[in-house]
Every structure is written in C-alpha cells, then in structure tokens.
Image 1 (cartoon, rainbow, N blue to C red):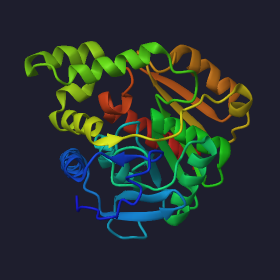
Image 2 (cartoon, rainbow, N blue to C red; image 1 turned 120 degrees about the vertical axis):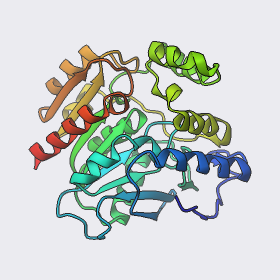
Image 3 (spheres, rainbow, N blue to C red; image 1 turned 90 degrees about the horizontal axis):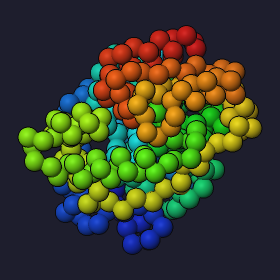
Image 4 (tube, rainbow, N blue to C red; image 1 turned 90 degrees about the vertical axis):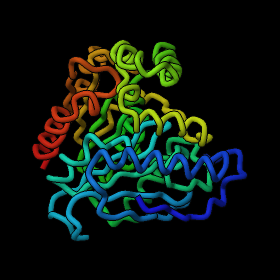
Amino acid sequence: MPETRTRDRGRTRPDVGRYVNDALRERYFAACDAVFALGAPAVAETDVETDFGTTHVYRYGSDDPSGPARTPVVLVHGAGSCSAMWYPNTPALSAERPVYAIDTPGDPGRSVQREPLHRPEDAARWLDETLAGLGLDQVHLVGSSYGGWLALNQAHRRPDRLASVTLLDPGGLEKVGLRFFAWIFASLFATSAPKALRPRLAAWLEQPVLVVPELRAMIRLGVRAYRIRRPAPLPLSEAELSAIRTPLYLVLGKRSLLVHPRRQVERVPRLVPSARAEIVSGTGHGPQIDHADEVNRRMLAFMDSVE
C-alpha cells in the first residue's frame, strides 16, 4: 500500500489516538501492508476530512470510479485493528459490489484523529461525515466486534444513509463481561508463545491471529505502536433497539465470549422487526475469518434480499 503522509497534528493531545513514535508507526504500516496483500488489492485510497480528523478509506472492486450500479458495502473493523483485517472478505464482496473499508480514528491505521470521539453521538456524526465525503447516499454497513457497535450505533442515531447493517459478533448488545477481557489478554499473551505451540493455542482460544503470521505481527505491533482513544461501546437499551428500522443481519459465533449467542439470536429479532439473526458453528469471535466463504455468501445473500 502507498504510504499516507498526512501530518499528525493530534499526536501530542492525550484525548486523541496517536502513535508512540514515527518509527513504530512505519513498522506498523509495513505490517498492515503484509496483511492487505493476503486479500483483494485496493483499487484506490482516499482521505476524507471530518470534524474529528482525517479518515483513510480503501476502495475495492472495479477501477472505474463509478463502479457497478449496486449499493456499495462499507466495512468497519474491530478495536485495536485496521482495515487490513478484512482480507478474507474483500475478494468475494468486491466481486459483487463496490467495497469501501474505513480506518477508524482512535484505532491504529492510517486515519489521523485530531478531535476526541468520546460520545456515541460523536461516533455517529464522524461516520456520517465520512460517508458524505465519499459521496455515498446508501450503503450496506458491515461492522465486526467494536465496528459492529459503531454500525449498530449508526443505525440508531444516523440511519439515513443505511440500506442495511450487518453485525459480526458485535458489541452494543450487552455489557462486555470479564470472560471476553480474559480471552483478549490470553490471546495477546499467546502471540508470544513458541511457534510450535501456537496452533494448539489457536484452536483452544479460537484465535486465528496466532496461526496467520502476518496478522499476528500486525496485532503485536499495533499494541506497541498506538495509544487507542475512542468511545466506549455502551449497550443499546431495548427501547433504542426497538426504534431501529434499518434492516439488520446479526451473525454470531456459537462460542462467542463477547455476547451470549442464544440469548441475542432470540432477543434482537424480537426487538427489531427487520432483523435476521444466525449462529455460525465452529467459531467464536471471528466468524468472518474462521468461516470466510460461508459468511461472505450469507452477507451477500442478505444484501441482495434487502434490495
């Protein structure tokens, strides 16, 4: 990926996300590029100016800027990551629709945060400004984990540009429990394990990061290189969920530690009339990575059904 030379004017502010130093930032960018190379090549990159900073966006699909005449897909990554995490999904999705992957300000990536994003309404405003800057009036918004909370928050607060929302094992449905944080810390610790042990640990933790060398290097560098600053993924109330009218597709891993899958697969369609909810077996928090082909097919079928 070409390097982005946006001036980091927010680096000295304690309330915005920032890199520890330039050297670690460049090493992280190189690690990201190695992960990007595992997926579809981006046909373009662009920076969108918002009230909160510069948002870096990758576009996939046809190199014709007008693209196919189908509603585009917008991808929002999980916490502590960047758009490179979508490498298992960009080939299939971009073969059918224009795809945009957004680096979230406050997380490591090529976006540059200059103003704090502390409140859910700020997050919704930032994302709406980004979509407007891209000239997108209707999109299929897809979010994973923390990005799922951002997508759900958008459906609640600023739904006008949303044709649909797909939530991949998302935050925002219930309070995050200790079991999820324990899994995160155990996974980070396991990235330092001897190479011979990583496949066993990956199977035990259901953590593909451990067996994809490029992904492991990117995650480890991101923790060292970047100081994250972003809104807390506060769960939506039942009244807030019930007010959502955007078509929702909820995909949960059967062994998710972020939510209780059986509870949410019953609860969300009951509260949101337009919602569809499914559980994917043989996975935990990363269904779109562990079962990429299956989840890609399901997402595209849902988007087709909406249209």
